[in-house]
Amino acid sequence: MTPDPNWWRQAVVYQVYPRSFADSDGDGLGDLKGVTSRVPYLRDLGIDAVWLSPFYPSALADGGYDVDDYRDVDPRLGTLADFDVMVSTLHEAGIRILVDIVANHSSNAHEWFRAALAAEVGSPERGRYIFRDGRGEHGELPPNDWPSHFGPSAWTRTLNPDGSPGQWYLHLFAPEQPDWNWDSPEVAADFITTLRFWADRGVDGFRIDAAHLLKKDLTEPYRPVPTIGVVADYPSDGSHPLADRDDIHEIYRSWRVVFDEYAPPRVAIAETAAGAERRALYARPDELGQAFDFDLLDTPWDARAMRATITKCLDGARLSGSTPTWTLSNHDIVRHPSRFALPPETDLNAWLLSGGTDPVPDLDQGRRRARAAVMLLLALPGSTYLYQGEELGLPEVADLPAEVLQDPQWFRYSGARKGRDGCRVPIPWTTSGPSFGFGSADAHLPMPSWFSEYAVERQAVEPGSMLELYRRALRLRRDLQTTETLTWHDGTGHDGTDGVVWFSRANGWHNVTNLTTDPVALPAGEIILASGPVEHGKLAGDTSVWLRTPPGQ
Ligand code: NOJ
Image (spheres, rainbow, N blue to C red):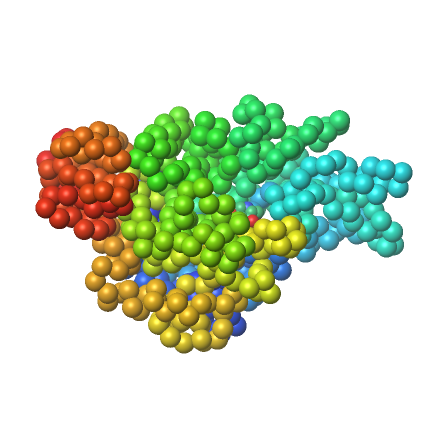
């Protein structure tokens, strides 16, 4: 592999959610040997890197984002030796690997949290987490009314070693995910050890979970936090008590020193809920280097809105000299072929609670738009993050029965939020078998019978399949990728139609996406890829095309 330090700037990164990718030992959970066995598939797909969601020991209170031990592999997923084989197999195939670093919280089974519970109030062991006395005569009320992302309270009361009620600890997610105290030098040092541990094992970079949450201001009186998920509701000046605080950046500057000890330097990408300008701070070259842009996820299927979002993300990345990151799906959101199949005003949680029946999704529209959208994304300057199964066009499994749900949101909101399990169902490799080739037994989340139609085995030989489109687009993109600039063009040049997103790159590579339902005239150029029909020089609705013209046109 080339030692190019800038490999990440326009890379295509494929997210593997390991417990749902490939199960090598038939226990229903995907594992590392499963990932290794599918490296030829990933190579043929044409991606540059894999981002591996957490594979660490975990009781799975939050799909692995509750980490018991940051420097080991969950025995159900394999061993460190399996990890090393997976990394070298990926590298031999020319694919890099990023691992997930969950730094805001550990799990409640982490040895330091267990030590904290066993230790005295005010002890150094408690000082690694955020413990406070409760309010009320007997400390029976939480220290304040801060909410958790997974509802309702961000505080849980502990029991003292003698069984009597004790202090409360802060958890911005589930109670099984106690927040670290990032003012503790021991915590900071331990994460440096973790980064080196994985970098020494050959990982190329890190995806930083909840990167905006690490530092907190718990000075009293506590300040109100009406909504925690939407940081944009708070003044964007680093003064929020829990999110996107200015003092967080010292942490990432210290991590950069570690990244730069390696050749090429290890890379990192921040997962943040911060707005575009604040996001740029995490992406500075002396910090993480790149930050996720999630703005496209709630941009309507409308050319003006799409162009505005793209412009905002390009401008945001430019602020720090980074590149934007385009993404349509991940393990936290309803899969995009389903989102694109629903009317824009749909409340996705209510839709999931209806079992995916109200409103009825228009899956043909969802598929058309998913095809058009991925071509648009892949043609943009910057990097693209794909989520496992999107190359198969998998829709959401919206009708998972209550008894199989795993997402803590489902339990914490007492059934009022269905959660994210529907996008985490294992992916189908073959058209038959107990889990469609995922493994030799049933999968940990049930796979519906219609997954057969989406199987890799079928799509690999089916002309016009989603998999074929992804493979062709990714192969072409390798050759077409060029300088990080883009030129906008208005309308399609022939009939001045609105509703088209048309831009070109410096080498004459054009993307034209028709976001209306009517055919539009195409500009001149040689068609090199189309997501749908092009007839008599017209591009059908919900369709993208890549054209080539002489450079600069
Ligand atoms: C963001 C992760 O993507 C999500 O899956 C997880 O629940 C939270 N962070 C907490 O770690």
